[in-house]
Length: 445
Image: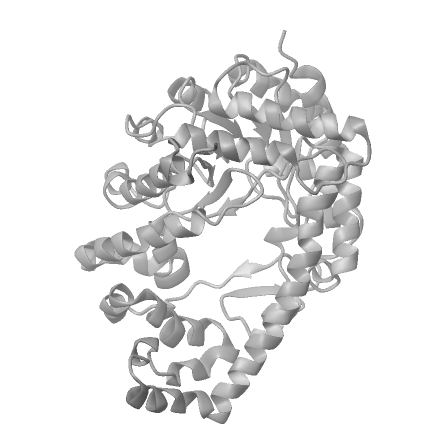
């Protein structure tokens, strides 16, 4: 009889997740060769990520947002509003380029949903931006400096009454709602329900329901790429879940870049308390992973240019490490997508508390020789192919870059080749050079 989940060791849980991922239950493969390629890709990934043995060759993936659709002349606007064109482009990309692990359209999202809710946090193509432009983040203090205690006392209540009304125009009336904790006894529940009867609140919920219906329809269509098309042609979906560094959640989502930098000096105790309060929420978010054991972390404000080494040790790394360790204990593999540079923190992340072979790190502009020096034998790593190279260079320059990376840091396993930043655009011939040459040159003997 199988062990109960609570009785399993972290290794047991991880093995169970890999077994489920490889089983591909419900997937209809287009051929026996596609099924064999799918299972081989997972075996290869297990070999490199767990550092158990050197695989047959260096794996390769291409990370993109609007890149896949742009190759087939689908504009960013069309990608966000015409799901049929988006999915057709992604399907063609997977079949034409055949990376070992592809990214689906999840990072694009639905323009219709954002429009219904009047989203303020981003600009997107056709909405304050040209239709041929990718989306852009709008910096701002969506949580004010005097609201730290409100956030820490009840994050859900804070998001309903403060954050959502500020970031979604349609959600403004939610600020009038009673706290959900007022529904504790009948005589009080009636009064607590009164705000739900306000016309403006009911209109807000109507728009939320409309957006929810649109989001559900979009997600169903997008998941067909991630869960069906990819697998059917032999390409496993590499990301099963998502989370963030608690510091980034506070700095990106709530306080904004300028404010969080000042908070380190003006209100460090409150900031640290908020980071601690957000940490279990980021663990819970990562635990929702499905399909495969990888949980994607986009790392933003831990970059060398955003904070000093000492600040990284104090404010950024401890809470992120707590989230990483919690997910490892549940058999998951954190995929840390390191945007910018981590040249001054590589020795710090190779921490004795994090066991070897339990994480995957993709680097943007960090010195890969130093990455190998510090992470070799401790964690799988990859990335570093420049975005600019794939956009403006030629195929030979891309091949030269691939060869250099494999020669310098990919010779003894534990390495995955990929671009270092998620792309909106790239030359098709350069992507072919990246993927095809890596498969040819990256064979281990």
